[in-house]
Amino acid sequence: MEVLRAHGVQGVRVEHLAKVLKVTKGSFYWHFKDRDALLEAMLEEWRRQNQQNVAKYLDGLEDPAARLEKLARIPFDLEEREPFGLPLRLWARHDERARKAVAEVDDLRLGMMAQTFAESGFSLEDSRARAVLLYAYMRVAPTLANLDDTALRGLCERLLLKR
Image (cartoon, rainbow, N blue to C red; front, side, top):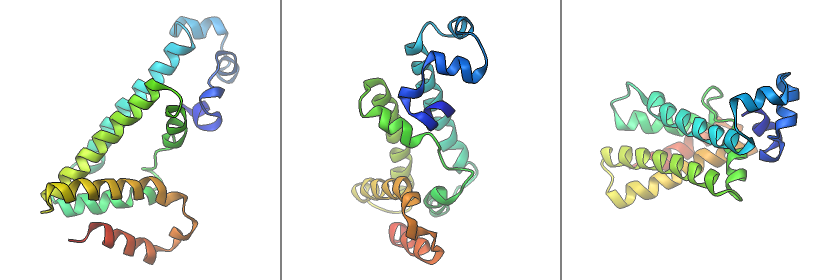
């Protein structure tokens, strides 16, 4: 996954991985039938981790408004940032398996967010739309230079989450 993050899916090559891990290519093939099997295992692990992380991140927060506030802060919480999101999304642009994995995780996250907005009293239609807006904010906000400003970030969060 670190090679994917650093070099994209094109960098995930058996020879390169064997060298980085200081193992023989034969050792690699002991664990994976071929590169394709490794890529499939990477997608499955990413999908599994993300499904667990969504539930774990909000564990113990009963109040829907508190869950939404915590979700809005994920992009700025260094420990919770997902370092493989962009490389996986780039991979998904030209690989159907990766596209399905990303779509599955996105659907899970959007569904959880929409449900949380609905629990906060928004209509089903508004909840879905707000979930899309919040998720788009979460995906893009960390790349915007001007969001170092905590006051601006706070305003963005209030506008996204207010009733």
